[in-house]
Length: 310
Image 1 (cartoon, rainbow, N blue to C red):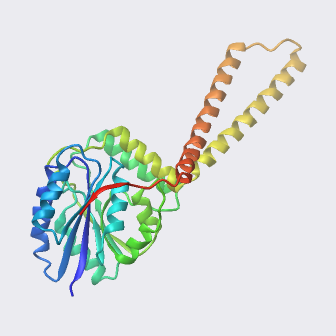
Image 2 (image 1 turned 90 degrees about the vertical axis):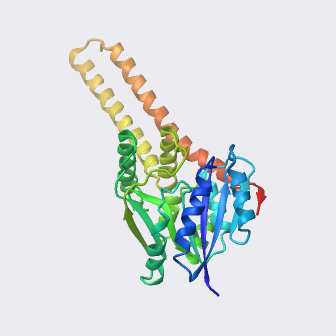
Image 3 (image 1 turned 90 degrees about the horizontal axis):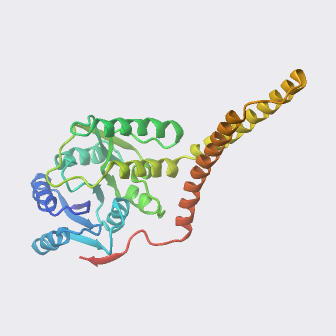
């Protein structure tokens, strides 16, 4: 019996991309006759006709095309987890439906696992052609920053697009945290990983659903999930603020003794108070982000809710 490769494909408002994705991947699978394939589409609360496209594909190919429809939009991370949890393959690939993850790389990725002994073969963009310069700049800064403050290495330009062994997939699925940052989780579980570089590819259809603010929020979640450096920063800010105020008090007392006159400078003192107060609120905000994550985890709510499944 041929080994099975599962393709996990999260979708949100991708009615134009879904049929194009299926047709393109089918051309690749025809070149891999020694393996069976299954598609696991995840409808993440789409408001267009994405679910209808999935139903149609399932009707055409019920043995290989499956889909899971969420009760609402839970986010891409939840979609990835649902797909990995329901994939039955000996090997599992995570792919974007917009074809920015070239399906043509699948044979090379499989070769890395079968012939070279890797547990995971991922992909890494070597350029960001077509992206706004400001987005590329902040993306590069994010990777540099998080790799300095975190013990979990996250490769710059790495995509979610990767092919994994069943053992690695089981390890990732075994982490049931609600606050998920898959790029970090894939690295954290370990396993022998190789990255294939490729040039950026434009979307086949539709438009990206990631705004700049959403990407920034996602980056902050990644930093909080895989590093406690912001908490250490808050502690150091508090300590330095205390030492600075102590030095200022000693200086004021000495000047009073030497000159014997009241110390002027109320405006500057007010400015210092405002600065220290702002630093305190900033540090409280950092601590609050961590407490908020803990609060969400302690609720033990499901990562996703299924409305329809085929």
